[in-house]
Length: 247
Length: 225
Image 1 (cartoon, rainbow over the protein chains, first blue to last red):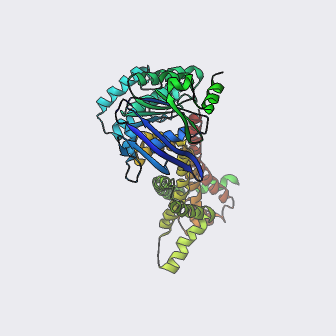
Image 2: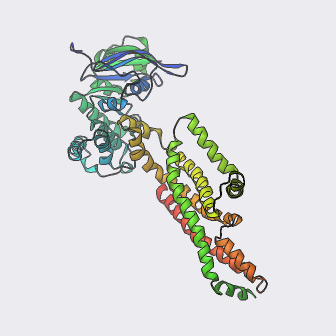
Image 3: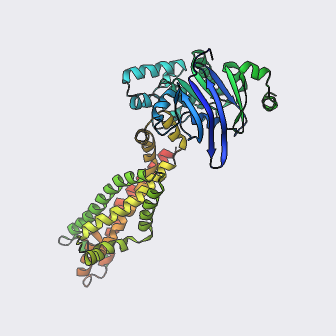
């Protein structure tokens, strides 16, 4: 970790739904500017893990530290945390009643109470960067899936988060549109954004991730640099997983 | 024979009386509808709460108005309250109260249904953007829910207007009561008069309710597309 304090630390995180243990003591350290790909079979707990990091799921044990401050406890102001940890979901989830620009500006204006002019300038610049500047006044229903997902990413970026969580953001997209969304994420990686990415796109993970964690049944089975994980996975389970996906 | 009865409608101030009766009908309906919409939204939103006690409380309230006929509620407020609790309310005030309570119960169910039928991802992405619950309802959930409430809401309003006919039973002189009075006076001279008076009232109700129901269908078609 370049010898510095990690921006995000997860210690022995436990999540249960009733009696079912979904996360069975997860440990992870995320250095600033690192990109971590979270891989694993469906139902292994990887999405739940991401959701715990910004308080969408309550956890039953362990600790999460953001800049050395614990997020676990009744006094946690998740609304503040969520401005520092942005999240993008599989199903885009733009608000259909608002235009693209209104979607993006909702949180900057209402939650962060920023000046409209300044926030709008940032929004337009971000839209420019993802190639959708001409869509600012459209409504979500007028956009393709890939466009919606790029807007959703812009919406999360416009609150200036320090960490971004991506939860299978290309999983429900038409294959032709996957690329345009992954390009945006790769661009962010180059700019040094700290990211945790749950994905099934192995080639993409290989390309952008610094580190890979491989999960199964609520445990981290293998954790390695991306290079090592893909060229020489240590555990049998990870080898099987990669074999199935790379036929 | 038939046309001998129709003239009653235009005799003296009969037409004016019927229109006045209609205005009473509309006044009760309008006041109750306004209260219903405002309070229905508020209670509908409260009912999306996960608190079991809140859910149960309003559930009981809703079911009481669903299961017990409106006529019985009118009698309870008009006859039983004054007799047993020394609470004398004019028939029109009773009408406002009962129709509002009924409307709010039904409306809150419509609003609650509309909100919880929205994809839960809308809630999650609102949270992930740091919106407070109030902001989430105000900017995201309610604007989307309104669309889904309007067709059933108009349906409810139509039912409320029609049900005002029951108010004759507690002595509100609304359009049907006026009709009955005119019929009673003229029945001996013109036995056919009931046909014309009720026929005319039929026409008046139709003129009010039909445009509403058409409007609702138009909106449904428009939003379905």
